[in-house]
Image (cartoon, one colour):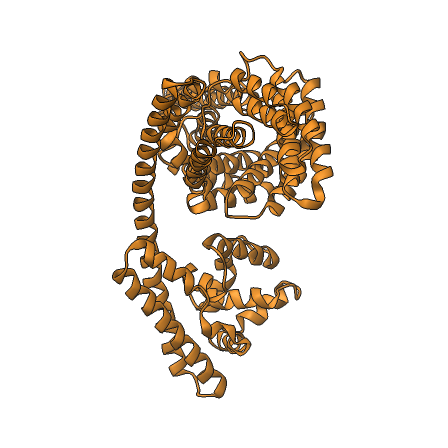
Length: 564
């Protein structure tokens, strides 16, 4: 009996030791991840990345695996390593959402936003950042401030939102960074707010104040790069917006005084040369033009060619060369505005950086005279021809892709319209239903016509005809919207009445009209065309505004119970 008791005691001790060892392993792993966490979020992401990549996550618990995914995602993002998948960070977000750990859930949402943004899924990135910023400020004010900052960048740079929303997000982030004492991101907010105010006519004084505050802050921190950046922005502002050439010259001279080993920015020299040119001092303009570093980007080349065109026109009286320069500047500028989407613009700029580098080499050739002048012009013509050929081929590919996407959306639009037309046949006949039925029939005819044109004409002609038919005639009648709202309330359990009550009466008529179309399952194209919006981005932005008034993350959460 005693022998049996001893065996029981030994087995119990062994089991307890195994469990204890497992707990120690779990704790040790989490402690190591926590140590790396402080590196990732405190400017030591380069040291943190190899530590995370070397970890064997096969033996990790779900919590450890999720925590590791958050840290690895942020480390990769901060080290500019491109992402090919978002599955790991999505799993981490789902885990921490259910775990009750608000801090790690916040970090996971921000990391998810970074990954999606890097992969080009901008609408989903916006949603992740919005969910992050809605968490209590006490969770981690630094992470919430960063989510607001990223939202500001996205709304400012993309067609998904207006500069007004970007300005709001920067202004929400600024006091958070000030309270945290984070001078770097405080400068980013000040510079961004000043940049937005530059383009608002009655906010120019505010723009100057914010940019000067950014300069002062950067000087306190001995941040030479941001001192230079804001001085350059002020110089450009005074030159382009105010045409105050003395002030522009002042800030440009201060900007180019930066150490060229740290900052190599040719546009600052170009702006200084322009200031001297408009002040009637062409010799000084040429002096600083010769001292300018070699142009590296598309914008550098545009500013350079515009400056050369002005010099040729004003002082060297060579109208032929002036025209050649301005045409080159316009060709490059046109390429930068294809489709108006920032992520596409970046892709286009990367594709022709090689051509621009070759074009920038022409700068030195323009200084030669006599026989070298002919050689320089010939080289420029060849490079321009090569660039235009590339640009034309690239536009053809992009236009074909857009038309294919539009065809698919039109097919979906046609199905939605025909379904609504069929439902009207099942509703009791009345003057309002007959009128609405007639309007929808006109819309169906319009979509049919668009689809016919998409196969009948080439991409360029089809796009032009599509733009000409942006406004559907049936939607111009106010009774169309009234009848549509009544019909949607009949079909979907008074969904619009419920929406207005939930919003506290905040929904405007155009928002109720939008919600009615959305309940009918109409595609983005139908909504855009019917409501006469300028682009697809406006459709998405309007959806966010309505969801916010209803207090939901997205409209599907609200309307789904009414559609069953």
